[in-house]
Image (cartoon, rainbow, N blue to C red; front, side, top):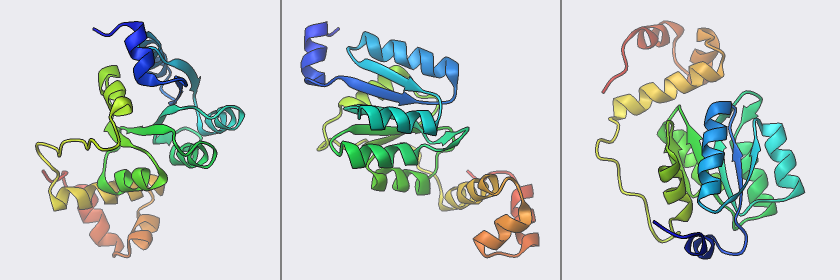
Length: 186
């Protein structure tokens, strides 16, 4: 177990951490766990609150949920990158897919964790050096699963409107309905 001195040395001079998540119980648990590891934690329950905190004092570390009640967590990541490019930020989401992971990394996130992520996973991701890469997944998604996940994501973003989703995906509405009626591929 590390001592507070060792943790502080690992975190550096600035141990500020912003956690943005609209799941209040998870937010409180993660904030407590990160404080016990030496971080100085600020929390926000949405994009607007997160943006306000970033603008007032950009953090050295950030953990941001992808889908928030008032918008997309990538907006917070983008603002962090503008104000403090060296911030180590990670994205959390319950809707894991490759397209989202690529977007998060392009916006400047150093890692991408699927919910439910525990405090140890979050801490490890935040402390990982840029040279260390995450291990490839044991069971990567099949191409069919990736396609299905993408379709589901667009469907949700279109508020479950089949016609709008079909238009955005450039596919026939009936084809989309058949895909949505099937189970997720493995």
